[in-house]
Length: 228
Length: 263
Image 1 (tube, rainbow over the protein chains, first blue to last red):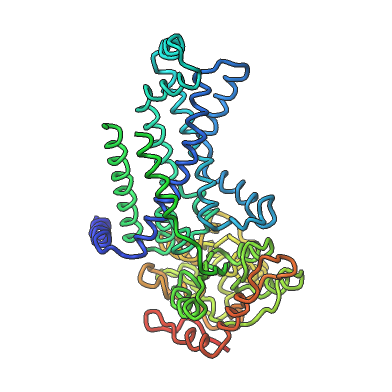
Image 2: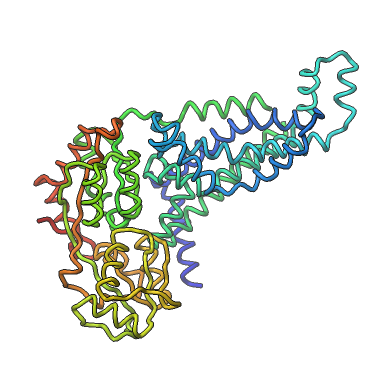
């Protein structure tokens, strides 16, 4: 018990010491996660709307596939994209491996199915008369979809939060595609993995607490947006 | 709400750090990184050449693989047999000796295989196997793992059974694991010294020429991979083998002990 308690005290001390390296790590986590959730939202929200509104052949199959992709293991994404981004892979000439951009690409792949699924669920849960009514009133299909989007904004926000939660907490993609480079691609999660491997339990724990605090602040911020 | 959110996210995107300085990619072993040597050795080089060395710390096997595929510019590793193969196959050029330390066999106080004070590591692993004492292996194709396999081979033993744990972890984690399981393991001296305070294990076998552990630095062949930053990589290799680099390596101490030596 003393071991855990001591670690906890060291952890709290570290959080308030504003260590430059910890700041950099937090920042890397935040901006890679934010960029990937932005891209995931750009693809996932329209995809979810489309699947929720339109009825076409193969729709059920796509939805089943999407559900499977939600369970995509992060190391599999890391492995596949490693092959794609490696110098010997199809996109090797871009030199993206072990840069934040490779991590952002991997995390976008992880977050997109989650965003799409949550939006789809929100559409399914919305009043089915909205689209029809708005179109009767003379709106185009695009305008009607836009109106529907406004009606389900809380569901969309939940989709973004869920996707963000997935990418900021994952370690497989960040480790394999980022390479855990100090000050460049070291995120909160890969730093925790590293500190644990170095036997620095207290430092790892403190980073864990920082990660939780960051998640809390981000959610508070999004909550604030929701209430407006 | 959406406009506000997207503006916030766009600002974040714009604020991502610009990559102005040149980056040199170094694949190396966990021992040079976990021991703290690189954190001490790199800043003077980075400052003098206005660059950033991106350290990717993996096992020797993986580090050489990253060199083969051209995903890094330089490798700093410790498995001479694999390094020579790497150069002979045309994956790397201009291998240079950098430094050396030695491997040690770590064991618990109880010493169930009774090998404390044995000077021959081959005899020691034979005793570990015959007494079925717990042995934790890196199992990750690293330099240490390569040397461990050579010791088993020299002893004429194929290690298998519930006493032999093939962990697939870095050196530090393996030391921790061997400590928790009260077993033996092979470690480089540098990582052991860095972990001395965190493990109940002690050195039981040391000081034999079979445990000599030289490190070499190799540039990835630019003819194979044109993206290799030849100039910066050469500067880095020259720095490691220069008088300044050697003085820094010799001067690096942990718990009052010197971790690496230069020839």
